Image (tube, rainbow, N blue to C red):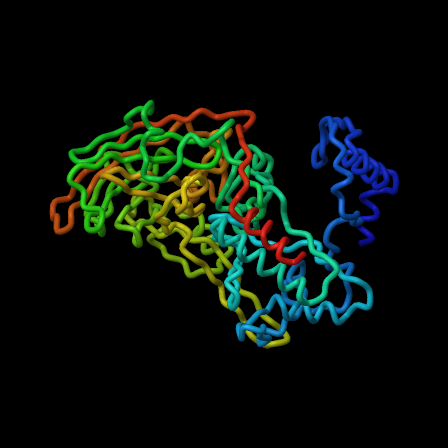
Length: 475
Protein backbone atom coordinates (compact mmCIF):
# COMPACT_ATOMS: atom_id res chain seq x y z
CA UNK A 1 0.00 0.00 0.00
CA UNK A 2 2.94 2.34 0.59
CA UNK A 3 3.69 2.22 -3.14
CA UNK A 4 0.12 3.30 -3.94
CA UNK A 5 0.41 6.28 -1.61
CA UNK A 6 3.52 7.43 -3.42
CA UNK A 7 1.87 7.18 -6.83
CA UNK A 8 -1.28 9.11 -5.96
CA UNK A 9 -1.06 12.28 -3.88
CA UNK A 10 -3.82 13.71 -1.74
CA UNK A 11 -4.79 16.38 -4.25
CA UNK A 12 -5.35 13.82 -7.03
CA UNK A 13 -7.45 11.67 -4.71
CA UNK A 14 -9.62 14.61 -3.61
CA UNK A 15 -9.99 15.86 -7.20
CA UNK A 16 -11.13 12.42 -8.39
CA UNK A 17 -13.63 12.20 -5.53
CA UNK A 18 -15.13 15.65 -6.18
CA UNK A 19 -15.34 14.91 -9.91
CA UNK A 20 -17.34 11.78 -9.14
CA UNK A 21 -19.76 13.73 -6.93
CA UNK A 22 -20.24 16.27 -9.74
CA UNK A 23 -20.81 13.45 -12.26
CA UNK A 24 -23.51 11.88 -10.08
CA UNK A 25 -25.25 15.25 -9.72
CA UNK A 26 -25.08 16.06 -13.44
CA UNK A 27 -22.71 18.97 -12.97
CA UNK A 28 -19.47 17.97 -14.67
CA UNK A 29 -17.61 18.71 -17.89
CA UNK A 30 -14.36 16.74 -17.82
CA UNK A 31 -11.54 16.82 -20.38
CA UNK A 32 -10.22 13.62 -21.90
CA UNK A 33 -7.66 11.87 -19.67
CA UNK A 34 -6.42 8.34 -20.16
CA UNK A 35 -7.94 5.97 -17.61
CA UNK A 36 -10.57 8.48 -16.39
CA UNK A 37 -14.15 9.40 -17.27
CA UNK A 38 -14.57 12.36 -19.63
CA UNK A 39 -17.28 14.37 -21.31
CA UNK A 40 -20.28 16.43 -20.20
CA UNK A 41 -22.62 15.06 -17.51
CA UNK A 42 -26.00 16.80 -17.36
CA UNK A 43 -28.33 14.33 -15.63
CA UNK A 44 -28.73 14.31 -11.84
CA UNK A 45 -28.91 10.63 -10.80
CA UNK A 46 -28.14 11.23 -7.12
CA UNK A 47 -31.65 10.17 -5.96
CA UNK A 48 -30.82 6.67 -7.21
CA UNK A 49 -27.49 6.37 -5.39
CA UNK A 50 -27.64 3.84 -2.55
CA UNK A 51 -24.34 4.82 -0.96
CA UNK A 52 -20.71 5.71 -1.47
CA UNK A 53 -17.80 3.28 -1.32
CA UNK A 54 -14.26 4.56 -0.88
CA UNK A 55 -12.25 2.91 -3.64
CA UNK A 56 -13.02 -0.50 -5.16
CA UNK A 57 -12.52 -3.98 -3.70
CA UNK A 58 -9.71 -3.82 -1.13
CA UNK A 59 -6.32 -4.82 -2.42
CA UNK A 60 -5.51 -8.21 -0.85
CA UNK A 61 -2.21 -6.92 0.53
CA UNK A 62 -4.28 -4.54 2.62
CA UNK A 63 -6.10 -7.44 4.20
CA UNK A 64 -4.05 -9.46 6.65
CA UNK A 65 -4.29 -13.04 7.84
CA UNK A 66 -4.76 -14.97 4.64
CA UNK A 67 -2.70 -17.71 3.01
CA UNK A 68 -5.05 -18.65 0.20
CA UNK A 69 -3.47 -19.82 -3.08
CA UNK A 70 -4.72 -16.99 -5.30
CA UNK A 71 -2.99 -13.87 -4.10
CA UNK A 72 -5.45 -11.40 -5.60
CA UNK A 73 -8.83 -13.11 -5.56
CA UNK A 74 -11.00 -15.78 -3.97
CA UNK A 75 -9.68 -15.07 -0.46
CA UNK A 76 -12.40 -16.88 1.45
CA UNK A 77 -12.95 -20.35 2.85
CA UNK A 78 -16.34 -21.91 2.11
CA UNK A 79 -17.91 -24.94 3.75
CA UNK A 80 -18.55 -27.01 0.63
CA UNK A 81 -20.78 -29.52 2.47
CA UNK A 82 -23.43 -27.01 3.54
CA UNK A 83 -26.90 -27.92 2.31
CA UNK A 84 -29.90 -25.62 1.96
CA UNK A 85 -33.49 -26.35 2.95
CA UNK A 86 -33.98 -28.24 -0.31
CA UNK A 87 -31.16 -30.65 0.49
CA UNK A 88 -28.88 -29.25 -2.20
CA UNK A 89 -25.28 -28.17 -1.66
CA UNK A 90 -25.40 -24.37 -1.56
CA UNK A 91 -21.88 -23.01 -1.20
CA UNK A 92 -23.04 -19.42 -1.67
CA UNK A 93 -25.46 -19.62 1.22
CA UNK A 94 -22.75 -21.20 3.36
CA UNK A 95 -20.47 -18.29 2.54
CA UNK A 96 -23.21 -15.78 3.38
CA UNK A 97 -23.87 -17.43 6.73
CA UNK A 98 -20.18 -17.51 7.69
CA UNK A 99 -19.70 -13.89 6.68
CA UNK A 100 -22.78 -12.70 8.56
CA UNK A 101 -21.60 -14.35 11.79
CA UNK A 102 -18.45 -12.23 11.78
CA UNK A 103 -20.33 -8.91 12.10
CA UNK A 104 -22.45 -7.15 14.71
CA UNK A 105 -23.40 -4.33 12.34
CA UNK A 106 -25.81 -4.52 9.38
CA UNK A 107 -24.18 -6.16 6.35
CA UNK A 108 -24.94 -5.28 2.71
CA UNK A 109 -23.83 -7.40 -0.24
CA UNK A 110 -22.33 -4.82 -2.57
CA UNK A 111 -22.06 -7.07 -5.66
CA UNK A 112 -23.70 -10.30 -6.72
CA UNK A 113 -24.58 -11.71 -10.13
CA UNK A 114 -23.56 -13.95 -13.02
CA UNK A 115 -22.86 -13.02 -16.66
CA UNK A 116 -24.86 -13.98 -19.74
CA UNK A 117 -21.70 -14.25 -21.82
CA UNK A 118 -20.89 -16.96 -24.32
CA UNK A 119 -17.41 -17.40 -22.89
CA UNK A 120 -16.79 -18.78 -19.40
CA UNK A 121 -13.96 -17.90 -17.00
CA UNK A 122 -14.62 -20.20 -14.02
CA UNK A 123 -16.78 -23.26 -13.42
CA UNK A 124 -18.69 -23.89 -10.20
CA UNK A 125 -18.31 -27.51 -9.13
CA UNK A 126 -21.49 -27.75 -7.07
CA UNK A 127 -23.99 -25.01 -7.88
CA UNK A 128 -23.61 -24.57 -11.63
CA UNK A 129 -23.38 -20.80 -11.07
CA UNK A 130 -20.49 -20.51 -13.49
CA UNK A 131 -18.80 -17.27 -14.48
CA UNK A 132 -20.28 -17.22 -17.94
CA UNK A 133 -22.00 -19.44 -20.52
CA UNK A 134 -25.47 -18.71 -19.11
CA UNK A 135 -28.27 -17.66 -21.42
CA UNK A 136 -30.11 -14.50 -20.37
CA UNK A 137 -33.06 -16.38 -18.87
CA UNK A 138 -30.81 -18.64 -16.83
CA UNK A 139 -28.89 -15.56 -15.71
CA UNK A 140 -32.12 -14.16 -14.26
CA UNK A 141 -33.01 -17.37 -12.43
CA UNK A 142 -29.57 -17.60 -10.85
CA UNK A 143 -29.49 -13.96 -9.76
CA UNK A 144 -32.98 -14.34 -8.28
CA UNK A 145 -31.82 -17.43 -6.38
CA UNK A 146 -28.79 -15.57 -5.02
CA UNK A 147 -31.05 -12.70 -3.97
CA UNK A 148 -33.28 -15.13 -2.08
CA UNK A 149 -30.27 -16.59 -0.25
CA UNK A 150 -29.10 -13.11 0.77
CA UNK A 151 -32.56 -12.18 2.01
CA UNK A 152 -33.02 -15.40 3.97
CA UNK A 153 -29.68 -15.00 5.75
CA UNK A 154 -30.75 -11.64 7.17
CA UNK A 155 -28.66 -9.15 5.22
CA UNK A 156 -29.78 -5.53 5.22
CA UNK A 157 -29.64 -5.30 1.44
CA UNK A 158 -27.91 -6.33 -1.78
CA UNK A 159 -26.81 -4.68 -5.02
CA UNK A 160 -27.00 -6.60 -8.28
CA UNK A 161 -23.92 -6.46 -10.46
CA UNK A 162 -24.66 -4.90 -12.82
CA UNK A 163 -27.29 -2.75 -14.49
CA UNK A 164 -25.74 -2.67 -17.97
CA UNK A 165 -23.26 -4.63 -20.07
CA UNK A 166 -19.77 -3.14 -20.33
CA UNK A 167 -17.90 -3.59 -23.60
CA UNK A 168 -14.63 -2.21 -22.18
CA UNK A 169 -14.15 -4.99 -19.63
CA UNK A 170 -11.45 -7.68 -19.83
CA UNK A 171 -11.25 -11.24 -18.50
CA UNK A 172 -8.15 -13.15 -17.48
CA UNK A 173 -8.61 -15.95 -20.02
CA UNK A 174 -9.25 -13.71 -23.06
CA UNK A 175 -7.08 -10.69 -22.28
CA UNK A 176 -4.10 -12.06 -24.25
CA UNK A 177 -6.16 -12.28 -27.43
CA UNK A 178 -7.35 -8.67 -27.91
CA UNK A 179 -6.02 -5.10 -27.97
CA UNK A 180 -6.51 -3.40 -24.56
CA UNK A 181 -7.07 0.15 -25.82
CA UNK A 182 -9.66 -0.99 -28.38
CA UNK A 183 -11.96 -3.07 -26.17
CA UNK A 184 -14.64 -0.33 -25.78
CA UNK A 185 -15.17 -0.22 -29.55
CA UNK A 186 -16.59 -3.71 -30.01
CA UNK A 187 -18.52 -6.34 -28.10
CA UNK A 188 -16.78 -9.61 -27.28
CA UNK A 189 -19.20 -12.36 -26.15
CA UNK A 190 -16.20 -14.53 -25.27
CA UNK A 191 -15.28 -12.18 -22.40
CA UNK A 192 -17.56 -12.96 -19.47
CA UNK A 193 -16.91 -9.66 -17.65
CA UNK A 194 -18.67 -7.74 -20.43
CA UNK A 195 -22.07 -9.39 -19.93
CA UNK A 196 -23.05 -9.10 -16.25
CA UNK A 197 -25.71 -6.50 -17.11
CA UNK A 198 -29.49 -6.80 -17.00
CA UNK A 199 -29.50 -4.28 -19.86
CA UNK A 200 -27.75 -5.35 -23.07
CA UNK A 201 -26.02 -3.04 -25.52
CA UNK A 202 -26.39 -4.61 -28.96
CA UNK A 203 -24.74 -3.49 -32.23
CA UNK A 204 -26.96 -1.51 -34.58
CA UNK A 205 -28.61 1.88 -34.22
CA UNK A 206 -32.08 0.46 -33.57
CA UNK A 207 -31.83 -3.29 -34.14
CA UNK A 208 -29.31 -5.94 -35.13
CA UNK A 209 -28.40 -6.40 -38.78
CA UNK A 210 -29.22 -10.09 -38.35
CA UNK A 211 -31.08 -12.36 -35.95
CA UNK A 212 -30.00 -15.99 -36.16
CA UNK A 213 -33.44 -17.57 -36.01
CA UNK A 214 -33.95 -19.47 -39.27
CA UNK A 215 -35.80 -16.58 -40.93
CA UNK A 216 -33.60 -15.29 -43.78
CA UNK A 217 -35.70 -12.22 -44.61
CA UNK A 218 -32.95 -10.00 -43.16
CA UNK A 219 -30.56 -11.28 -45.88
CA UNK A 220 -32.46 -9.94 -48.89
CA UNK A 221 -29.91 -7.26 -49.81
CA UNK A 222 -26.71 -9.18 -49.10
CA UNK A 223 -24.20 -10.31 -51.70
CA UNK A 224 -23.33 -13.89 -52.54
CA UNK A 225 -19.74 -14.66 -51.50
CA UNK A 226 -19.19 -18.22 -52.74
CA UNK A 227 -21.13 -21.16 -54.12
CA UNK A 228 -20.72 -24.91 -54.69
CA UNK A 229 -22.84 -27.60 -56.32
CA UNK A 230 -25.20 -27.84 -53.37
CA UNK A 231 -24.69 -24.71 -51.24
CA UNK A 232 -24.29 -20.93 -51.44
CA UNK A 233 -22.92 -18.68 -48.69
CA UNK A 234 -23.58 -15.04 -47.76
CA UNK A 235 -21.60 -13.04 -45.18
CA UNK A 236 -21.98 -9.83 -43.17
CA UNK A 237 -20.75 -8.53 -39.82
CA UNK A 238 -21.20 -5.96 -37.07
CA UNK A 239 -19.43 -4.92 -33.86
CA UNK A 240 -20.02 -8.33 -32.26
CA UNK A 241 -20.26 -11.15 -34.80
CA UNK A 242 -19.49 -12.40 -38.27
CA UNK A 243 -22.82 -13.66 -39.66
CA UNK A 244 -23.06 -16.45 -42.22
CA UNK A 245 -26.10 -17.62 -44.14
CA UNK A 246 -26.01 -20.77 -46.26
CA UNK A 247 -28.68 -21.81 -48.73
CA UNK A 248 -28.45 -25.57 -49.28
CA UNK A 249 -29.71 -28.00 -51.89
CA UNK A 250 -30.21 -31.72 -51.23
CA UNK A 251 -28.85 -31.38 -47.67
CA UNK A 252 -29.92 -33.75 -44.89
CA UNK A 253 -29.43 -31.72 -41.70
CA UNK A 254 -29.53 -34.81 -39.48
CA UNK A 255 -26.96 -36.84 -41.45
CA UNK A 256 -24.82 -34.71 -43.79
CA UNK A 257 -21.96 -32.39 -42.83
CA UNK A 258 -21.64 -28.80 -43.98
CA UNK A 259 -18.15 -27.25 -43.98
CA UNK A 260 -17.18 -23.58 -44.07
CA UNK A 261 -13.41 -22.93 -44.44
CA UNK A 262 -12.15 -19.48 -43.41
CA UNK A 263 -8.80 -17.97 -44.47
CA UNK A 264 -7.78 -15.09 -42.19
CA UNK A 265 -4.12 -14.33 -43.03
CA UNK A 266 -1.70 -15.08 -45.85
CA UNK A 267 1.15 -17.57 -45.72
CA UNK A 268 -0.33 -20.23 -43.47
CA UNK A 269 -3.23 -22.65 -43.16
CA UNK A 270 -4.35 -26.13 -44.16
CA UNK A 271 -5.25 -27.00 -47.75
CA UNK A 272 -7.18 -30.06 -46.61
CA UNK A 273 -8.59 -31.95 -43.67
CA UNK A 274 -8.09 -35.61 -44.44
CA UNK A 275 -9.95 -36.77 -41.34
CA UNK A 276 -13.12 -35.06 -42.60
CA UNK A 277 -12.67 -35.83 -46.29
CA UNK A 278 -12.57 -32.21 -47.46
CA UNK A 279 -10.05 -29.86 -49.12
CA UNK A 280 -10.02 -26.12 -49.84
CA UNK A 281 -9.24 -23.78 -52.70
CA UNK A 282 -7.07 -21.73 -50.31
CA UNK A 283 -5.23 -22.72 -47.11
CA UNK A 284 -7.79 -22.40 -44.31
CA UNK A 285 -7.15 -21.11 -40.79
CA UNK A 286 -10.55 -22.16 -39.45
CA UNK A 287 -13.14 -24.75 -40.34
CA UNK A 288 -16.78 -24.49 -39.28
CA UNK A 289 -18.56 -27.83 -39.24
CA UNK A 290 -22.35 -28.03 -39.06
CA UNK A 291 -23.28 -31.60 -38.24
CA UNK A 292 -26.81 -31.74 -36.76
CA UNK A 293 -27.99 -29.92 -33.64
CA UNK A 294 -25.58 -31.46 -31.13
CA UNK A 295 -22.26 -31.99 -32.90
CA UNK A 296 -21.44 -28.70 -34.63
CA UNK A 297 -18.31 -26.69 -33.88
CA UNK A 298 -15.65 -24.30 -35.13
CA UNK A 299 -12.15 -25.74 -35.48
CA UNK A 300 -8.79 -23.98 -35.78
CA UNK A 301 -5.69 -24.87 -37.77
CA UNK A 302 -3.32 -26.32 -35.12
CA UNK A 303 -0.60 -23.93 -36.34
CA UNK A 304 -2.94 -20.97 -35.60
CA UNK A 305 -4.32 -22.30 -32.31
CA UNK A 306 -3.79 -19.37 -29.93
CA UNK A 307 -5.01 -21.34 -26.90
CA UNK A 308 -2.44 -24.08 -27.48
CA UNK A 309 0.29 -21.57 -28.33
CA UNK A 310 -0.24 -19.54 -25.13
CA UNK A 311 -0.57 -22.40 -22.65
CA UNK A 312 1.78 -24.96 -24.22
CA UNK A 313 4.44 -23.04 -26.13
CA UNK A 314 4.64 -19.86 -24.03
CA UNK A 315 3.51 -20.76 -20.51
CA UNK A 316 4.35 -24.49 -20.71
CA UNK A 317 1.24 -25.48 -18.77
CA UNK A 318 0.22 -28.11 -21.34
CA UNK A 319 2.00 -30.92 -23.12
CA UNK A 320 3.56 -29.81 -26.41
CA UNK A 321 2.85 -31.41 -29.78
CA UNK A 322 5.66 -30.91 -32.31
CA UNK A 323 3.26 -31.34 -35.24
CA UNK A 324 1.31 -28.23 -34.29
CA UNK A 325 4.30 -25.93 -34.95
CA UNK A 326 4.50 -27.08 -38.59
CA UNK A 327 2.69 -24.88 -41.09
CA UNK A 328 0.25 -26.78 -43.30
CA UNK A 329 0.11 -29.77 -40.96
CA UNK A 330 -3.45 -30.64 -42.01
CA UNK A 331 -4.62 -30.70 -38.39
CA UNK A 332 -7.68 -28.79 -37.15
CA UNK A 333 -8.04 -28.54 -33.37
CA UNK A 334 -11.16 -27.99 -31.28
CA UNK A 335 -11.18 -24.46 -29.83
CA UNK A 336 -10.72 -24.25 -26.06
CA UNK A 337 -10.90 -21.73 -23.23
CA UNK A 338 -8.82 -22.07 -20.08
CA UNK A 339 -10.92 -22.42 -16.90
CA UNK A 340 -8.14 -22.75 -14.33
CA UNK A 341 -4.40 -22.84 -14.32
CA UNK A 342 -2.70 -25.49 -12.21
CA UNK A 343 -2.71 -24.37 -8.59
CA UNK A 344 -1.54 -25.82 -5.28
CA UNK A 345 -3.81 -25.53 -2.24
CA UNK A 346 -1.47 -25.40 0.77
CA UNK A 347 -4.13 -26.02 3.43
CA UNK A 348 -5.51 -29.08 1.62
CA UNK A 349 -2.09 -30.17 0.32
CA UNK A 350 -3.80 -30.72 -3.01
CA UNK A 351 -2.92 -29.66 -6.55
CA UNK A 352 -5.81 -28.57 -8.76
CA UNK A 353 -4.90 -29.48 -12.36
CA UNK A 354 -5.03 -27.24 -15.40
CA UNK A 355 -8.55 -27.29 -16.84
CA UNK A 356 -10.25 -26.21 -20.04
CA UNK A 357 -13.52 -26.51 -21.95
CA UNK A 358 -14.42 -26.52 -25.63
CA UNK A 359 -15.66 -23.01 -26.39
CA UNK A 360 -15.84 -23.81 -30.11
CA UNK A 361 -18.94 -26.00 -29.71
CA UNK A 362 -21.83 -24.35 -31.57
CA UNK A 363 -25.25 -24.22 -29.94
CA UNK A 364 -28.41 -24.70 -31.97
CA UNK A 365 -31.37 -22.44 -31.21
CA UNK A 366 -33.18 -19.15 -31.82
CA UNK A 367 -31.29 -15.90 -31.18
CA UNK A 368 -34.20 -13.52 -31.81
CA UNK A 369 -35.11 -11.72 -28.53
CA UNK A 370 -38.68 -11.25 -29.74
CA UNK A 371 -39.34 -14.97 -30.07
CA UNK A 372 -40.75 -17.20 -27.34
CA UNK A 373 -37.93 -19.76 -27.67
CA UNK A 374 -35.19 -17.11 -27.56
CA UNK A 375 -31.83 -18.34 -26.30
CA UNK A 376 -29.08 -15.74 -26.14
CA UNK A 377 -26.35 -18.40 -26.44
CA UNK A 378 -27.54 -19.50 -29.88
CA UNK A 379 -24.77 -19.87 -32.46
CA UNK A 380 -26.70 -21.29 -35.41
CA UNK A 381 -30.18 -22.15 -36.64
CA UNK A 382 -31.66 -24.23 -39.45
CA UNK A 383 -34.96 -23.91 -41.27
CA UNK A 384 -36.21 -24.93 -44.72
CA UNK A 385 -32.73 -25.77 -46.00
CA UNK A 386 -31.24 -22.48 -44.81
CA UNK A 387 -28.55 -22.23 -42.11
CA UNK A 388 -27.73 -19.05 -40.20
CA UNK A 389 -24.56 -18.84 -38.09
CA UNK A 390 -22.96 -16.14 -35.97
CA UNK A 391 -19.30 -16.40 -34.91
CA UNK A 392 -17.76 -14.05 -32.31
CA UNK A 393 -14.85 -12.12 -33.81
CA UNK A 394 -12.44 -13.52 -31.22
CA UNK A 395 -13.17 -17.10 -32.32
CA UNK A 396 -11.64 -16.09 -35.67
CA UNK A 397 -8.48 -14.71 -33.99
CA UNK A 398 -9.57 -11.15 -34.72
CA UNK A 399 -8.00 -9.00 -32.00
CA UNK A 400 -9.96 -5.84 -32.88
CA UNK A 401 -12.49 -5.74 -35.73
CA UNK A 402 -12.83 -1.93 -35.56
CA UNK A 403 -9.23 -1.45 -36.74
CA UNK A 404 -9.22 -4.72 -38.72
CA UNK A 405 -6.47 -6.15 -36.53
CA UNK A 406 -6.03 -9.91 -36.59
CA UNK A 407 -3.62 -12.27 -34.89
CA UNK A 408 -0.43 -12.69 -36.89
CA UNK A 409 1.69 -15.79 -37.50
CA UNK A 410 2.29 -17.08 -33.96
CA UNK A 411 5.47 -19.02 -34.62
CA UNK A 412 7.00 -16.51 -37.00
CA UNK A 413 6.35 -13.63 -34.58
CA UNK A 414 7.19 -15.78 -31.54
CA UNK A 415 4.31 -14.08 -29.76
CA UNK A 416 0.62 -13.20 -30.02
CA UNK A 417 0.88 -10.03 -32.09
CA UNK A 418 -1.66 -8.13 -34.18
CA UNK A 419 -1.41 -7.29 -37.86
CA UNK A 420 -3.81 -5.58 -40.25
CA UNK A 421 -6.14 -7.49 -42.56
CA UNK A 422 -8.27 -6.20 -45.40
CA UNK A 423 -10.71 -9.09 -45.53
CA UNK A 424 -11.19 -12.84 -45.29
CA UNK A 425 -11.85 -15.71 -47.71
CA UNK A 426 -14.84 -17.96 -47.01
CA UNK A 427 -16.36 -20.93 -48.80
CA UNK A 428 -18.95 -23.64 -48.28
CA UNK A 429 -19.30 -27.31 -49.15
CA UNK A 430 -21.38 -30.32 -48.17
CA UNK A 431 -20.14 -33.85 -47.54
CA UNK A 432 -22.95 -36.36 -47.89
CA UNK A 433 -23.03 -39.26 -45.48
CA UNK A 434 -21.17 -42.19 -47.03
CA UNK A 435 -19.46 -40.02 -49.68
CA UNK A 436 -15.95 -41.23 -50.55
CA UNK A 437 -14.82 -38.52 -52.99
CA UNK A 438 -12.84 -35.60 -51.57
CA UNK A 439 -14.51 -32.30 -52.48
CA UNK A 440 -12.46 -29.12 -52.98
CA UNK A 441 -14.37 -26.14 -51.63
CA UNK A 442 -14.08 -22.88 -53.56
CA UNK A 443 -13.71 -19.67 -51.52
CA UNK A 444 -14.83 -16.08 -52.09
CA UNK A 445 -13.62 -12.79 -50.61
CA UNK A 446 -15.41 -10.85 -47.87
CA UNK A 447 -14.16 -7.39 -46.93
CA UNK A 448 -15.57 -5.65 -43.89
CA UNK A 449 -15.33 -1.96 -43.01
CA UNK A 450 -13.68 -0.77 -39.83
CA UNK A 451 -15.14 1.96 -37.64
CA UNK A 452 -14.13 4.71 -35.23
CA UNK A 453 -17.32 4.71 -33.16
CA UNK A 454 -19.55 1.65 -32.71
CA UNK A 455 -23.30 1.62 -33.22
CA UNK A 456 -25.51 0.31 -30.43
CA UNK A 457 -29.03 0.08 -29.07
CA UNK A 458 -30.35 -0.90 -25.65
CA UNK A 459 -32.34 -4.03 -24.84
CA UNK A 460 -33.62 -5.30 -21.50
CA UNK A 461 -32.68 -8.95 -21.07
CA UNK A 462 -35.15 -11.59 -19.82
CA UNK A 463 -33.08 -11.56 -16.61
CA UNK A 464 -34.33 -8.04 -15.89
CA UNK A 465 -37.97 -9.15 -15.81
CA UNK A 466 -37.20 -12.27 -13.78
CA UNK A 467 -35.36 -10.21 -11.18
CA UNK A 468 -38.11 -7.59 -11.17
CA UNK A 469 -40.59 -10.27 -10.12
CA UNK A 470 -38.11 -11.64 -7.56
CA UNK A 471 -37.89 -8.27 -5.82
CA UNK A 472 -41.69 -8.08 -5.70
CA UNK A 473 -41.80 -11.44 -3.92
CA UNK A 474 -39.59 -10.04 -1.14
CA UNK A 475 -41.87 -7.07 -0.39
